[in-house]
Length: 97
Image (cartoon, rainbow, N blue to C red; front, side, top):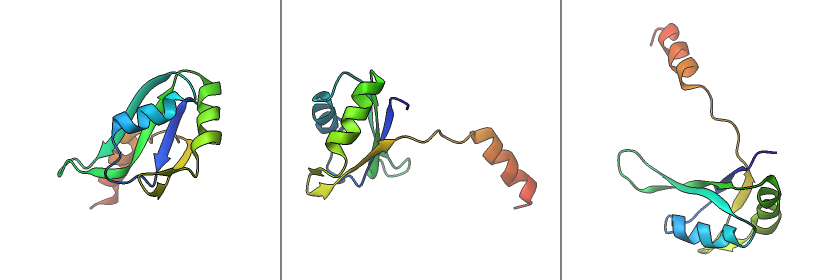
């Protein structure tokens, strides 16, 4: 299991600091990033949290998945690897669009 976690179904009011304080109960945190829209700068309702150890990541999933945060039931799972951007762009260029 990876140490990077996906945190979904977040309120648009949930901040990096709020997530940092929630996840700190389960271990050391390496990074927290609430994802924002590139054009508007508004939060998109999800974030990534990277824990320092695999054990802390597992404890975070067990402790926080389904927890109410800012009146929303958050989802916490291991993050899926990001697709290779070069491959996605080259497949678009081959499609003829």
